[in-house]
Image 1 (cartoon, rainbow, N blue to C red):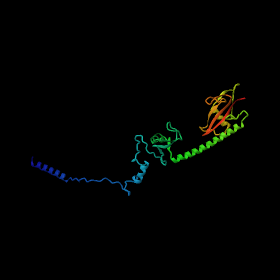
Image 2: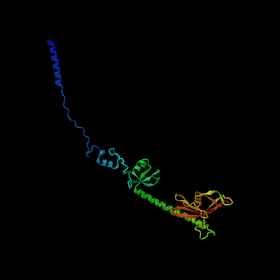
Image 3: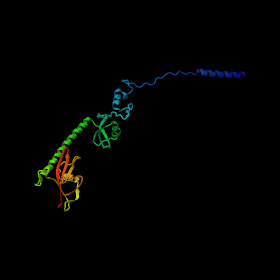
Length: 269
């Protein structure tokens, strides 16, 4: 290696050493994380203010940090509806049925069911709602008033029919008979021996009573014909009347209000 070549190599080595020594690196320092904005109350934001959090815990709404607690092992939890404190009894809650549901209740019924049945089967489909004790008391008062009015109408209807029976009393009525006087007369086509061309059933009798006594009380499930016997005392309620004659009938008009009257079936002229 000649002299010139050695000088070149020394120059290159000197340049590379100078470049490495001139490159400096600063030591990394710890940078703390950015702190959240602190309010006067010391909470990160107004959304998590203590008063608001307490309200969220009480109502179960307004934040996803407080999820709904699952019903474990079929145990009933507390059900809350805005403005209606639930009425509980033996671990069940009191509700009012809005529609009829098989094996649960009919529309209008006030019953007790488990909270799981209410939430999963009834509340979501709007088939029932919670009902307060005050509302139940109000409904009971209204029901008693309606029952009292219905009973009074039934008594007035009975009196109306008894007056007609009294007016129709004849000499054939003896004192040993339980009831005298005809309250209702029905005319039908009949043969020479009194056999009817078509029978008379309880529904027809009730319709004829409503037509004969239009001011009477004939509506309601409780109003129905409960007994019907012929002149020999034979029960003919389960069969249509097939012959002319007089029949003793009993109609239930209301709670503890029954009227017994005589139905006269005659042939049309």
